[in-house]
Length: 265
Image (spheres, rainbow, N blue to C red):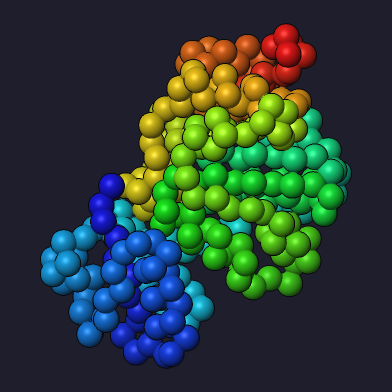
């Protein structure tokens, strides 16, 4: 994982400088003035791989594999479909209801957390854990500041709690039955789309496979279900004890389910 610095656009205003210095402090890294330097020159001069650039109220992370900025992405059509009464495979796998609580142990881009926050509603709770400080910061900032006229999207985004940290440690610190659903969407062992929105982030996100103790803790913490998203053909389901696997008939992804009652809890 390469080191990250924070800078601004070539002609920053005062707000950009303030946001950039705040970001650098939050990420425990350096804020450096741009001084008309190219990214290549900055990487060479400061010995870094990743550059977080603040321009106005927008933040972009530039990595050797591309750039990332927060966007609700596929959560938008998914919310619209749910509102129209159409099924969502993740929601069905969770058997998710309004007022329930979800712990998303692998927040990533936040797409699934947004959908969960919409379904659980104002009375529910969605907590997202992200181990990459850069990604957690960008998603947390984006959830708060993304401009949209879609009311249900905006409300869902503002209800998500983002925590930077290791999900196993977080799970281990939680009391029994703390959340209704514990959810995992780890980096697929075999990426489905090489040019996906995750591609620029592959150098900074946690690509380690889940381990058995993590699932044991998740089952302890979940009141209702533990759910994991993976490729249909993945051997991770069997390795981690997900006997029930479900998903769309024509979907390339599937959801493993460990139900508390079936787990003998």
